Figure (cartoon, one colour):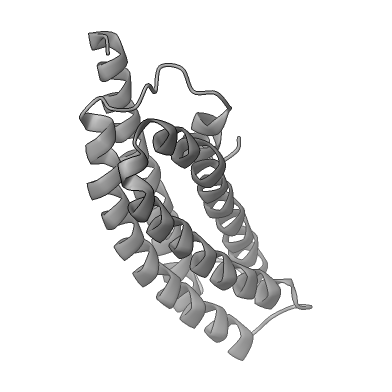
Length: 164
């Protein structure tokens, strides 16, 4: 692999870590808002639903793009990718529950507390998942073993830009 391709793969590794940092920041902000009610309930719920959409887009981009490309070039990572995809399913079910709770007519009080509990659990799972992914997938990217200079889909936009 050319040096430029290796540099691009390392850059993607950094972007992956930065995307995860942004998602961590967003969930911390929402959880803090729910705990202190610094914003109106409707604003909090809007932020919460936007976060759910961003995290879903990020994981869909990984599943259908980055992981597929990685497996073509690194079939030895199949078990690692399978673990990450399984985590994505678990996270998606929590996001579905949060969206359901937030979508109820004017959730207040106990519904917001329930959303907060779901987000607490989600934050713990996300931290474990992101750490594992950064150790394993970033290592493969940093080693220059993924031809990231030529992604075959628009997965970088989904994974790093949250679909924007």
